[in-house]
Image (cartoon, rainbow, N blue to C red; front, top):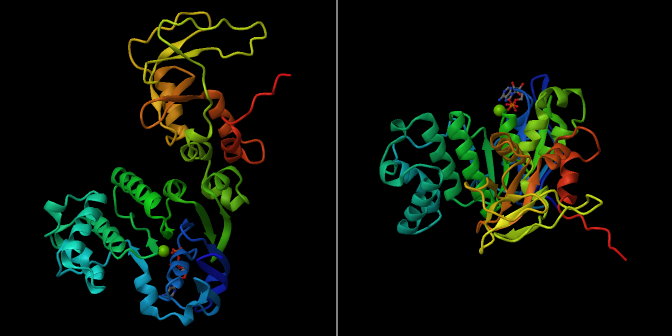
Length: 377
Ligand code: ADP
Ligand code: MG
């Protein structure tokens, strides 16, 4: 059962439908991004999740119970709400703003303030220089960060975020997205996130809901949305450069292959007659770190400069950028300790970005690197 369920939900203002016969499941722990043109019903959908807007017909359920059986105040405390124009209390300091709900819920001051400092740090604001400021002493972007920290401080199971990074410049925005993803990987909140920025949607979403005229035009994973737009509207919305966007979304971890390794001084095996063997071998040090590559038959020698290496959670877009920079068609893949665990090749990237085939990148990421060789009798 989904944590939040919309069933045949409609909302009308005057003659016009803001949301029309919407069916949508928000699974627990998922980050669902609502995206679409202005006026397509994203904000109305979001606000119906916590009764800030009441539907005219249909039903929204939270944790299996119809929303109207929940008290609005319980819903609003259980669902942190972050909006673009933040709504910080102007007469309270940043610290007091972030601590408001925890304090109301009885968290001891020292505990709430320590947590607030952690959260401020997490959203990129140095607690020492920000905790005593008033909202009017913040830039728009800083105020938004405080808004995110305040929503997280209450530790609600659900976060409703309406263009929360909208007023932040692109660089800071990318940083905030990264930070937010990192946190989300730890805390697994159920998040409904509204944006009109496709890159943001692709970067953050487990599931994207592309809205048109008050109902979903497509509900899919980002990779699927980019690879297989359901119709011309979706295709036009996701645009032409969707291959690159898709590469930004697919991790190296799903597409790399194991490699053959040697210690410095060892001789690489000759290419066998069938030419089926590897075209190169990796040279590693005593701890397994990559030092370079050699051709079959050569003596393994480290390169003068260390080869570029990526972690499995780097994107294929980053891998492609490394290849273009290094003039190489393979890049080493290392674990967090720096140990070589495989390589990502241009061929694998090309296979991922291909427009043909049914599943595209996602299919590939499930199978590549785990192919089992035919057993030899
Ligand atoms: P989005 O967030 O995708 O831009 P909204 O959900 O805010 O879209 O709005 C959907 C439609 O409903 C728009 O046409 C908007 O003008 C209309 N609408 C939203 N809220 C109100 C309101 N309070 N009164 C009248 N019309 C509204
Ligand atoms: Mg809106």
